[in-house]
Length: 445
Image (tube, rainbow, N blue to C red; front, side):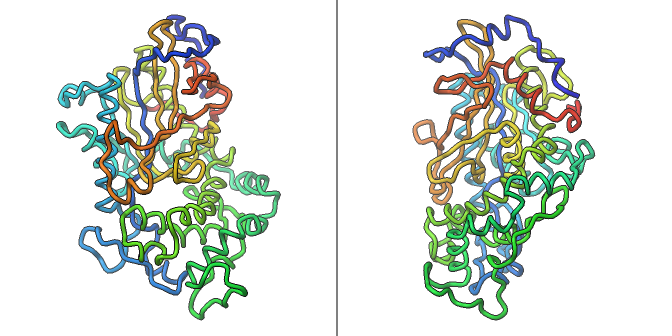
């Protein structure tokens, strides 16, 4: 199914889609869809596996319930939960300033909808965010159990979409010249730095020392492209293993571990950003590749677009989230989901201290439905909001005067030339029709 049924909206809603961008922002916020990533967590693999990749043991995160001797994988840390609450508090302040919330939690409760992937890490993030967003009235965290049945965040396992593994391999190879090992040359500086950190020798040492016995040099594992699975569409060989080995570094810094335990004291914040270019490339190939983005993210995109049209028209619509009167929709999943949705719409952003298009811990894509007070026209305004690495590390409370950075996001084929990159709703719907794979969506609310 496609979105052709909602292409035509009443003129009073859309106004003139080709009206030139206004120099003065006379729009008011009518609905906000906040699509966020989970907060700071433990590494994706336990230390018993990670320790094979380095000559020094990986640190244990101190703020895990029960303080186990080995990091349980993918667990929201106490500091991660606290930062999510700070972020929720900021959005509460901002949404109230924008007039979408009233500040009366009992009254606002009915106008907020929260949905999260059914994973402890993600559910914990959503609960912590909700505690800051609406502290005076507990919000229900809607979910579909188990996570593999969630057609919104995992449409392949839910049976809504189908990945053709031959196309997956071809699509990835087509982006890298059918030469996976060329990536090793393209990222040679990052790989050399990663090896020096993992094997504990000075960066730039010539010749580099041999790999100690009993340690796996992840940078020496060949980069390949092969069929993957529903969670990780392509198997990228050594490239994926490198990403696994460095995954803890961002979390160590963001969780506030002592400097000597952040990449064993060998990387600064900027150094972490440099080596994470390899990690970001893995996400780019796995989820932003157009074929995978179309299959994996079309259903989510369809629900987001339909929810905005539903709010603009006031009429219930199949395939939308929540109800026409819902003012704030909060969706929480993973960086995989954010990368895929960004890839589908070709969205890019850059925030201070991060590499391009990074879906940072707790960071969120926000879709604002706004209405011009002079023309009645509805527009979509997209931004990316995330705490800085230091705001996460030092658990900095957020306010309107000390906010997290936000980057306006240009929507190719839709945005106007104003500083907010607003996109007329009718044009946004038309663009979505062109990008969404009609065979990978459903109309279930």
